[in-house]
Image (cartoon, rainbow, N blue to C red; front, side):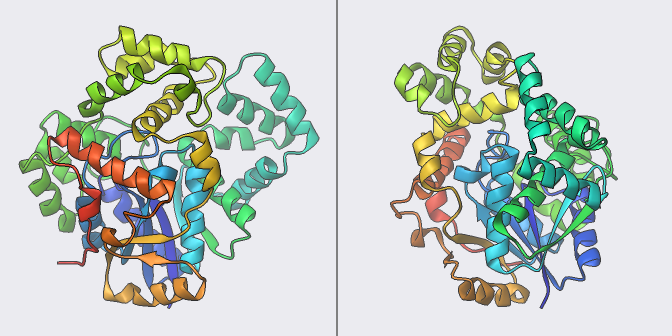
Amino acid sequence: MRAVGIVAEYNPFHRGHAHHLAEAKRQSGADIAAAVMSGWFTQRGEPALLAPADRVRMALAAGVDAVFLLPAFWAVRDAEHFALAGVSLLDRLGCDAISFGAETDDLPLMQAAAALLEEEPEQFREALRGLLDKGLAHPAAVSEAADLVFPGVGALLRKPNNTLAVCYLRAMRRLDSRMRPYPVRREGAYHAEDLDAVHPSATAVRLAIREERTEEALSAVPDACRPILAEAVAAGDFLFPDALDTALRYRLLTMGREELRALPGLSEGLEDRLLDAARRCASREAMLAMAKTRRYPEARLSRLMAHALLRVTQADIDSQPLPPCAVILGLTGNALPLLRRAEENGLPVFGKAADWIHLPDPWARTEALAGDLWALGRGKPAGAAARQQVLRPR
């Protein structure tokens, strides 16, 4: 058995994901595909549109053979650490290959970028310090400094999927992974709001659902997934980020400065900006617009706000740098050998949530709260994460 791994959000699963899945299997020669998927919250710090169960059902219907959880504790992180956690799980699950989408499929250039960012030669560090001192945001400074050392790398890093792809390659170097990487060239724009049914973006699909353009949204997903999405939309079983605005404002307004300073990566007096935004703004979107700075763009602030809601601190993050176990969300019979590989690699694997939800680990506590918050946004009872079961294809 040969397995290819994918780190994904599938928020929701659409035709672009189906194309990537097919190419991942074709290029790697894999018999099965395993996905590590974020659960209730996404990497940007927003609640997922659909509950994990619906997204898992869509993935299985589309041909993914196994879906494992990337808990919110690691899913709501910057690209570097999001990728590190995902690669760590796929590697210990025994995947032979990893595949990811990118604006370019120039693997040697991406590997050169990964080596540069991991090794950080003195020329690069000096250039980066100078650019940061001039007030450039960190991503822009990294791109410019990289171009000075290795022309072409900077342009590569200015594209969001390329940046994440390089982070996967950096993680593989850091973990000494034996997986072979297979980049798949992404067609269409990553955050495009106009819905292209052939090369859709998840952003455009979510927007179509929000604007009640249901048929357009359904046209962007594979035929096998369409009934699942249609059922969720018809039942109103989905969530937009602003559903938790009131809970977020309450949380920020009741946090003391010391509690705010304990959030992951918070510095430079940003706690005062967050408190001021919570007092003066009525929505999360307005808070993000008011509090953002060059050093703290909206995506980073959005993750900070999610960490506040999820009660995640820097001390928590430091205590568990990598996932200590795998949680199965969905599985086909084809993927059972993967579980044996995980056992051989010493990776504990949990099935139903009752087996892990009472663990004393910070990640388990955070995941349970993530499910409760998603349910709160939907006006449903708490305990959503605790009721998760391993799903099988229908």
